[in-house]
Length: 320
Ligand code: NAD
Ligand code: UDP
Image (cartoon, rainbow, N blue to C red; front, side, top):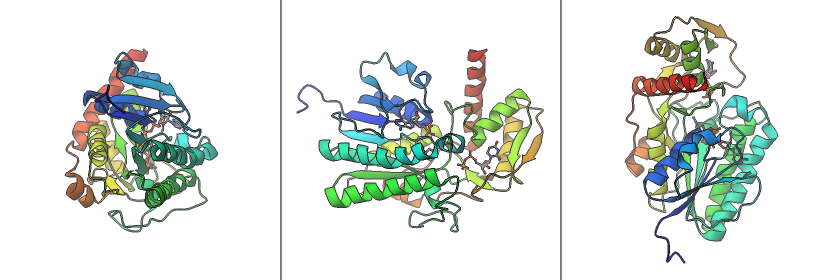
């Protein structure tokens, strides 16, 4: 079938988003043919504009809640808004994107016998009662809250992945991604790292929700992309789910102070109400990723924040 083409043909859904654009870049650099499918709900052409001149890169406007007929060898299914502000904007569409999107992409994988990777999330653990979270923990998720469209949508997508695997022998990989940050994060997506950096650069108050004692573990984007590619290339009998994230845990208040220091900002910290269903703590146990993928993050928070700050400084210059 592939007489004329020795390159792998890889579909990245959500390829114009934050993580997707870095993934497309990495896959192209490795000599693959990359097809990026995105409906530009939260992604933008700016994220992948530098890839457009590459003849091995193809951009397609497509909504994954509709079927897609393409011939590919691998699929990375990243399409889904990831920040609470974005996924709560149209919660019904968020659930549809996760669930119908998974059905459509799994159907495609089944038809063309492609390997398919799902970008799942630490949100499947909800507000966890087990800390740090291991993959065998079933989670503590509110099924009817404001985060449920995302959390339950992603949980149902995982179910679909494993049922397509058991029922149709589709080759699947499921990554549970923990908070990731870096260049090309959406500036207005309300996520904590982009919010704090932009507030610090503008000299605006740094908005800490609640007392700031809740914790998160932040993974730099290059580390995360490396984990996704390693997972896709791992032996077929390793399906995951596997946690991908940085196990170094910080309180939100510690993050705020770090950002103020690194930007040399005069911003003050102000406390705001904690959003509903905001998990108290989150930290991945990455033993499985270490043993099965030989993967662990290498970029420390300070260095990653400096890179992200540089990006936002550059982006604000570009727009002024
Ligand atoms: P993002 O919002 O920057 O990217 C998502 C992309 O999907 C965007 O380009 C958007 O336009 C596209 N999209 C949304 N709905 C679509 C649809 N119906 N059809 C086609 N395209 C659609 O978010 P991100 O941070 O890059 O996240 C990518 C994936 O990783 C998501 O599935 C997210 O759930 C998962 N994830 C991200 C994080 C993180 O910290 N960034 C953590 C856990 C999981
Ligand atoms: N947060 C905050 N100030 C902000 C934005 C977020 O204190 O301006 C907090 C938020 O309440 C949460 C944490 O930072 O406890 C991480 O939020 P984010 O939306 O980045 O990710 P998630 O809650 O999905 O982990």
